Image 1 (tube, rainbow, N blue to C red):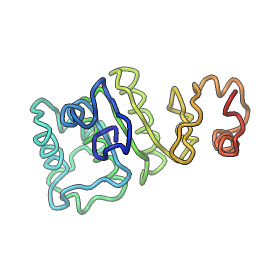
Image 2 (image 1 turned 135 degrees about the vertical axis):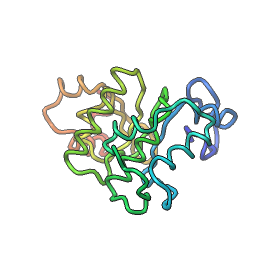
Image 3 (image 1 turned 120 degrees about the vertical axis):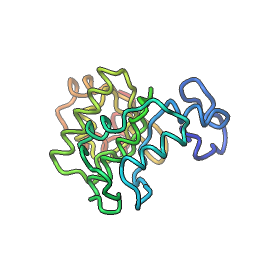
Image 4 (image 1 turned 90 degrees about the vertical axis):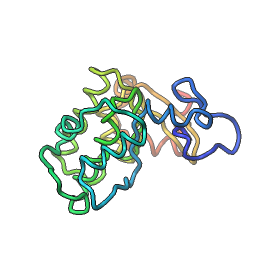
Length: 194
């Protein structure tokens, strides 16, 4: 709904101060996104996939080679995406989300398919994007230990409802339990009003 891919059944969705239904194309130009299972043109290279993505959005200023290098895909050449491993595909999906220097990143399970080294690299990349380039990142994941390491604020959703939001530093000050246990307690109704 944030990206205008689905319409809300009631109410409105605003992102970057714009209605997601009425301003979908402008929102897409100013945001980067990664869905859980990204889709590519399999017979084309990573570079060609990113070029098509930029053309679709009407963006002419972007450094595709630098972006591929940033996500750990330097020198992939003309190799078709069909030959990419799951981890390489995830890196390409992240490259597609950031190639146009968005103001906002919306990432769904961005570390799927990555090995431990790749997870660490992407965690460091997200940190740099947020802290050095002032990109706001909205990240959704079931790997709560990873969220705890990179998020400034954590929101907990239960049955489609945001039931709790807490600053990560405050959580760490108040609780010795891990985030997974905290989430389980919240789903049982504990800690919601603290």
